[in-house]
Length: 215
Image (cartoon, rainbow, N blue to C red):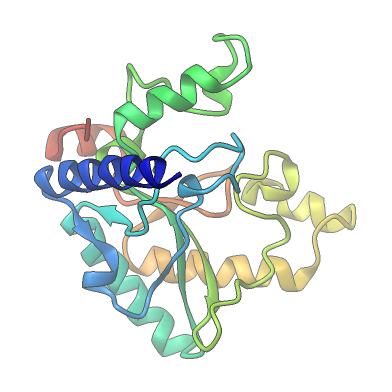
C-alpha cells in the first residue's frame, strides 16, 4: 500500500512538473478565494476513472487565469457571498488519450462524449475551464439542476426553456446558471450549448495560434 501511494505521488509530481514546464499557473495562486475539486482526480466523473492521480491543484494558461480573475471580481461585486468551484481546466493530451481509449463507445460517436486527442480539445490547450458557483462560506455548490459531467438535455443551456416547460428544471436552477454565465461573459469567456459548466477563453483557431497543446 505504501509503495502504491509513493508511485501515485511520483506520477502526480511528474504531471505537475510538466504543467509548470508548459508555462501554466495554479489558479489558486492567482485567485486564492477560488475553490478547487478536480473531478478527474476522483471517480466522480462521467468515466468513473481517476486520471490525475493525487493532483489537487488546477492549472491553466496565465492569460486564462487573468480572465477568470476578472470574472471572479465581477462575481464579488454582484454576489459577494459566492465563489467559483473549479472542476477542471487544463487536461493534458496524454490524459485525453486515456479517456478516449477507455470510453466504451464506437469511435464514430466518441467525439460526442470526449474530444479526439489527435485533434485536441480546448482543455488540452489550457484555455477551457469547467466550474460552478459555491458558497464562499462553506464551499457548498449551488443547485444547477444537474451534476457535473451529466449527459442529457437538462444539462444543456440550449434546452433550458424546454426543460423548464417539462418540469425537469426549476427557475431557481436556471437563475443560478445565469449568474455563472453573466460573470464568465464579463471575463471574456463563452459557454457551449450542451454543458452549463463549460467555458472557453478562446476559440480553436486563436488557441492554436497563441498556445501549444499541453502534452
